[in-house]
Length: 237
Image (cartoon, rainbow, N blue to C red):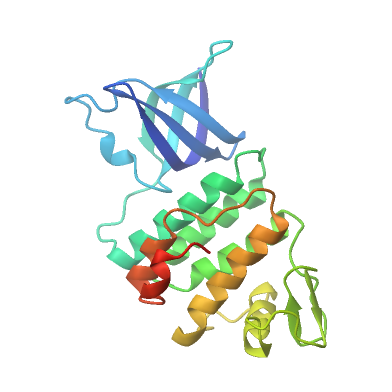
């Protein structure tokens, strides 16, 4: 038997009672597991299948097949109360990570980054996901090169003296710089009017620099919950 600790990113029901779990694990990076009977009436662990739950997974390996889960437990206590805003952000981040981590091997620092920012959300630091999305660019080596110039150029991944995209003005470029700053203040707040443009610019940056990236399917949910663009919920970024 082997054991992994990992964040649940997504799962797919398989047949009537079984499921395939996709996780990012501390020991092995992105892993998929087969779990028998999770949907059976007697199984009380269906509640474990929540986005970004950190799980302790004991499994067996069979050549040519997915590792089969023999035992699963929560690695952390589930908070007593999580509000709709927190749930929306956590679901969005798990949806996002399920896409971008599929080819990622073990990275302890990356795992700890996920853990750190999940806790920020649970602590009701409701702007943390903007920081997380931009900081993740650094793990892939595609973050913008910060300089003294004023305007972010999304296509080139640099800052420059003249505006490159009309949607990315000086104020938005300043937010990018602040978030890329490792010494950012704990109480740094993103004003409501800037949240939708910032999220749009982040997703556009990923689309430009990350192969085959697409806007997470949960994007309309987070926009609706945060009321930062109800009309845009019907649009693809």
